[in-house]
Length: 233
Image (cartoon, rainbow, N blue to C red):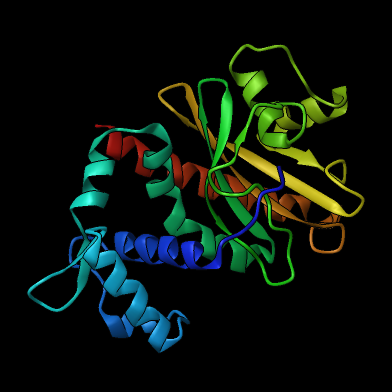
C-alpha cells in the first residue's frame, strides 16, 4: 500500500507541535499566523483542535495543549516522547541544511516516523506513522542493527567504518537514483531511542558537504537526547 500525505492532518499536527514548542504560556493566534498558515484555515484548524480537546484556550487568549494531548504525553509512549523532543528542532535543521529532516522512533524492533520538516522541492522521507521493519533499507535501520546487537545490515564495510568513526550513517544514493540519506542516533542512558535524519539529492547533499551536514545532524541528535533525558526523569 502506498502512503499518502493528508495536508489537513499535517497542518493540524504542525499546529500541535508549534503550541507544544511554545511551552506552558502557549502561542497566540497572531504568532501562529506568522508561521505561514492562511488566516481562515488557521481559524478552522484551531477551532477543531479546541473542540476535540487537543488544544485549549487559556485566559490570556493564547492556545495551549489540551487535555487529550497532555494525556497522551503522560502515557509515556516512547514514540510520542521522541516526537515531542524532536519536532520543535526539525524546522531549523531543514533551513540550515537545505534538506528534509526526519525523526524516527525506535521501538520493538521497528522504526516509526514521528516528525519531519520537508524542504521545498525536497524528498518527502518516511511518512509519519509508518512502521518500518526492514532495517537494511535505510541508514537509521543500519544504525539500529549495529547498536542493538542485531545482525548487521550495513551495505558494505566502508559504510560501517564511517559510522564508527564519525557517528553518522551515510547513504550516498542507495535509497534511489538521486536520493541521499544521513542519519545520527539518539541515545539516552545507553539505549537507542531513535534517529534524526536528513534526506536530499546528490545536488543538495554532495559529499563535499558531508562534514558540515554531519556536524549539524549530530548536534540536533544530541539536543534531542538532552530534551528526552529531561522528559524521562
